[in-house]
Length: 265
Image 1: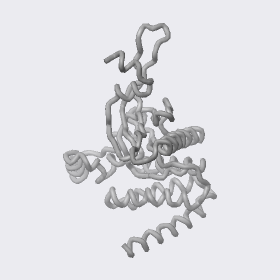
Image 2 (image 1 turned 45 degrees about the horizontal axis):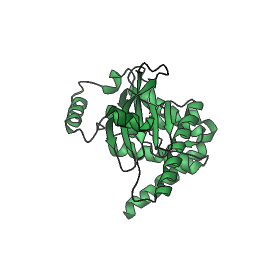
Image 3 (image 1 turned 45 degrees about the vertical axis):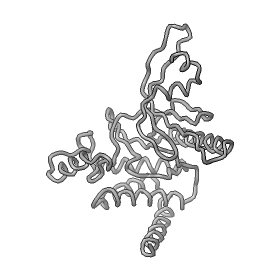
Image 4 (image 1 turned 120 degrees about the horizontal axis):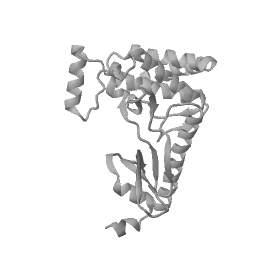
């Protein structure tokens, strides 16, 4: 067993030793521990946990097309993260990239998603947790956000600032939801995650759509969330400065288009 494992490429060995967290149509998510292979041959040393995103082979696509798309998407996500880091956006650090195997390894964030912390946003696939969190909110017995060392207003402000820094770097997230924001347990830093749909764009339309996606995520996931999103936009406006006005006008247009589509069905 050990000999067969050691004969495989290092990335495949890492995936086999990792724990599967979740799997979607495009990728599987693992928790693993990178190990430093000592040149002296005395064994291995365990290091920090990492999150592995494996874009596995799609058998319905031609192999050469599948390999090309996988390389592009892994490299694109890594570039978006690097650009964010250079611009001061709080995102997970990159730990490894293997475009040939379709694996991106990033820093493991120990904390909770913003979705879990806000009212009504407990993970839907954990029914018992959903009922428990709703009951806590109704009875006022606890405030999950305060337990993390921040206030609700401060959290919304931080979300707005981080998104503004990302947009000032001309990075469009593509899937802004409260599930893709995490509050780090040790420091209460807000971390933007999952840049699988991110791309580079300076277009006002793209930034407005990014904000609209988040607004709809707030509305659909967190009841009575208008004041929450207003706090996000207020902080975003301050950070964007003179760039805000054209984005605001386009955001109003995007909202109008969204309402028309809802009416048509």
